[in-house]
Structures are given as structure tokens and as C-alpha cells.
Length: 249
Image 1 (cartoon, rainbow, N blue to C red):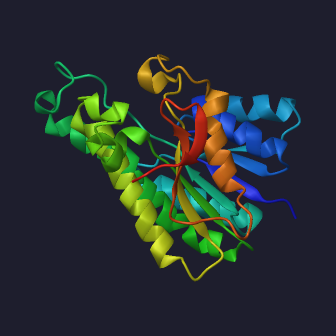
Image 2 (image 1 turned 90 degrees about the horizontal axis):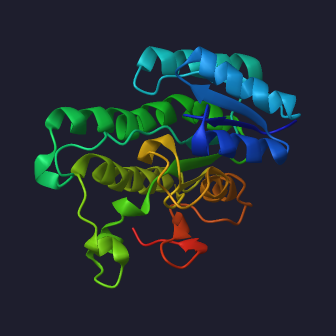
Image 3 (image 1 turned 60 degrees about the horizontal axis):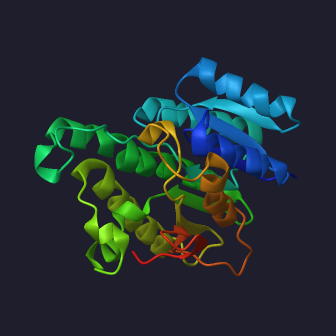
């Protein structure tokens, strides 16, 4: 039986490319998206390329929507092999983009999607992941949320002053990843965080220097880890080195 993967925020960008690459590896891919028209169009595009792709409506900020998506996946597939928590928002630019210029409203909005949504989706789908032979959870994070990188004077990130919402939400995603990995350490489920690198997407006005195809590669790697693969790690593009590897939290 084919493995089944749900990718949230999959109608475009890194999420769509993650779905495409997992489908190319023989998985049934469920493209999670809020907008039915955009989500179905993305699934249809992949199906036209030969992928076993299906649209699943899911709004990660709406618990009823999450519950409905989980119920549909259970009814149609009985289990879930891979969950890629990809959906995220940046919060946009407020003032001069420095920590003191941000508003609490934006902070709450970003956390609602980037952290609370991730936790809600993971908790709702964990029973289905437990039914899989070897479940994989991939939380799409960012190196900008690395405390080690931000405080290391030899790391370019230590010179980057940025707003609190997006950056700190990814730090929180990293901690959530560690905690889920600890909870599930005695199960076949592996939980890891992926760093796409600075990828050109709508999130950053397509200003990144990496393509969506490249940005998806760390998530695909972690979604297809073998039995002896790691859990509770931060893996992906290493800033300034043009290579992939473990990233310090």
C-alpha cells in the first residue's frame, strides 16, 4: 500500500514543491490548503503530471476544519504516513522592521498559524500517524529562529535585526519539534524540523535566492528518513555554505 503524506499550505511555493517531490517518490500526496479553488487547481496540476494527488481543505487556524480534514483522511486512507507542517505566514513588515516596531496583533496572528496551527494539526493527526508503520512528522522551520545562530558572532544571522513575530514563531516551532520527538521517542515516529533556506516565495515577496524546488528538499529528506534516521533534529540548508546538514537550535 502506498504511503500517504499530508502537506499543509501546499497549493503553492515550498508546500506544492514538497508534494510534487514526494509524489515522484511514489507517495499519495494530500495537498492541504484553505482555499478550495486554489487547492484543487494545485492537485489537478500534479495529477496531470501523473501524481496521485488529492486536495484536502484545511485551515490550520480553525479547529473544526482540522477535525474535518482528519476525519476525511481516516475515512479515505485509514492512516497517515507523513505530516509536513508547512503552512506559515510572515506577518509582513511593520514600521522599520525592528522588534520595537511590531504590534501585538501581528504577533498573535503569526503565532496562530505558525505555532498554534502546527500543534493543533499535529495533535489531530497523531492517532493516524501512530497507525502507520513508521510515521514521519516534518515541521518547516527557519534558520532565523535558531538561538545558536543568532548569538554566534561568526554566524551571519547574528547581524540580522528583525521583527519578533516570524522569527520567534520559528524558535517556538523548534522547541515544539524537540518536545514531540521526546514524547514519541519509543515509537517508530520520527519528528524533525526542516530549514528550507532563504527561498523565493510569496512569504518574502519572492526575494529569496533559493528556488521552491531547493527549499522543499530538506522536508522531503526528513519525510523519507530510513528506520535508523534521526529524530529531534534541525536539518537543512546551512547559510553561506551551500550545503545541507544539521543546524544548531
